[in-house]
Length: 177
Image (cartoon, rainbow, N blue to C red; front, side, top):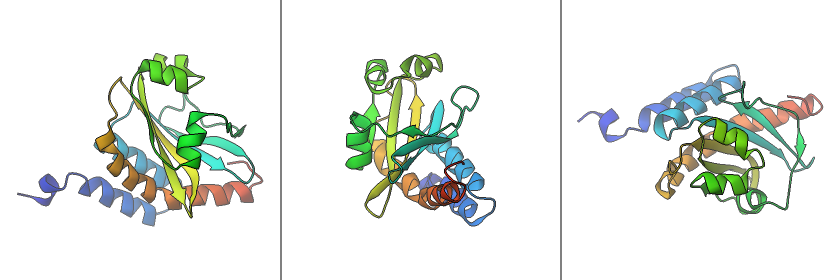
């Protein structure tokens, strides 16, 4: 039995590690993260939301479908949401299992549905006790399950240096990515 058969996650993790050591960043790291998540977990839409708690702003920095979901300007962090409570404050992933759950969770649920997405998982990227970003994967109804969360946590942890680079560069550029 080859190691790739006994450890199917090994190649995407190895690719991610190599990308983190390469230049340019954050492009290589985000590309490897998107590829690994596509291979191992699956998505129809993948976005990275950067949270600048100090400034009270969130920004979609990366999108696997920029034509439909472009990276964009900063928006105020909405603290009165389940996303903020669960993902940002508590540092816990959130799964929306179907279209109804997505409709309750996302103001832009009509656009999400138009892309064929009826389930989602939001995975916090945590550093030093704080949520600094979230990895957001969307797919067909029922796609995301609790048993996927440990592996999603690995990728969230591997994303920390990429997210730190984005935050540092954004602050140096006066808040513009």
